[in-house]
Image 1 (tube, rainbow, N blue to C red):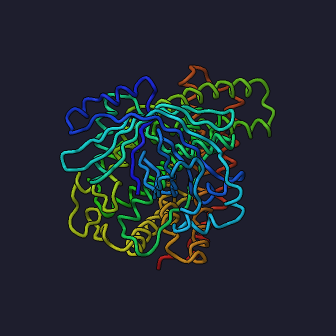
Image 2 (cartoon, one colour; image 1 turned 135 degrees about the horizontal axis):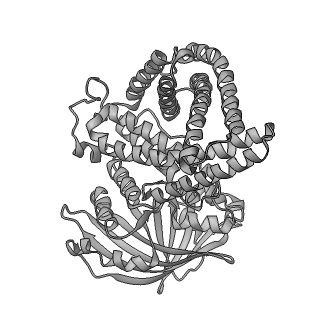
Image 3 (cartoon, one colour; image 1 turned 90 degrees about the horizontal axis):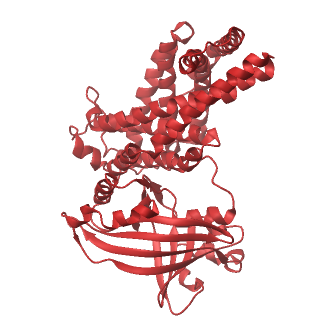
Length: 522
């Protein structure tokens, strides 16, 4: 099992990582330098990639190594995957007979796979690697890679550092990375060299990444399930980072924020077992990130959806055109602030902290910060702890969230915007928890409940959009020092009031259907 932390570093800063003062305080060995040339094999339609498998032959000097890597965990810079290796006797092409005794023999037994394997991309880079030893006995290899990935005429640079665990505690990898990040600008790498190579070979950049189902099963402990949930959320965020930084498609920002909201909900679930003090610090940092990215998403929706739909329906003339241009400038400023946040050392430190705290199934990173009482749930609530079966913890958490929503939601038609917002948050937390834990229950029981909850959440979201639009009209005045044209102001407010009235008319039906939906965990 290969476990490593991948750091993306600008070429001019790699030497700063290699000579970082943190290494001087550790026992280490002289760097081993080698040139590595690797060929990755697959079928023309990427049959191996679809199965989550990468097959490569790497050459270093006179040695050739065949490697098969399986799909594994990749989030917060941490990569953990199964890796099988064989030395090849002067062979440049893969020896498929070596795979016959592996769990993947069925895949390679397929005629259309064995007979169609071909080189699809290559990597070629110089590596400087050294072993380092931590005070607790943990040993790791720090490798500095400089080179490129090639697929046909396309190429992408390799400029990264990998800290691979050899023996001991994975927390130490994050501790070293934190020391490096204090002095050297880094980003945490989500995509492996193989994934980057496939993206080059396909010629298509990765699109916005939506949330993927979290694979849970009954034998898991609550702690192990919460770890999987957290890493799935972080993975969604990081998969949308590059697209967000490029900034051409607002969907990357949207999906990044979905991952962030889901992570905050998952962290709230962890707080039920750990207690609020244990998660307080990371909650504060996630709130900072949410508040920094929120305005960019609000202006995305207002500019590209609300005003665009209004302009298509009503002819407001030059005044609307000028106002939309003004809003586009405000939107660009907020989007740049969002990109700056993702590029910041503070964001890197946050993701490193998350990776460290969720590094093990017992969530030892949190427990060391603020040890909970035995069998702990949050203060004032006795409930299952981290060692409890996930089914027991899921039923406890879902029951609490369901009860909270039912207590708050009935008064939505008469409630203030602030009270409606709290109901919306309660619905969102319940939906995410239902999606997280849904795999533990029969689909036919989960689906009706989740459908009713999604319908309710959509209505609450539309009601919130009307409130946000009203706020953004005021912000447009402050940001530019110019009043909103009276006709435009009236059209926007009238449009959103009509939307809110329509949604409120449907709320009673949606609330009734939610009330009739049977909780699937009981």
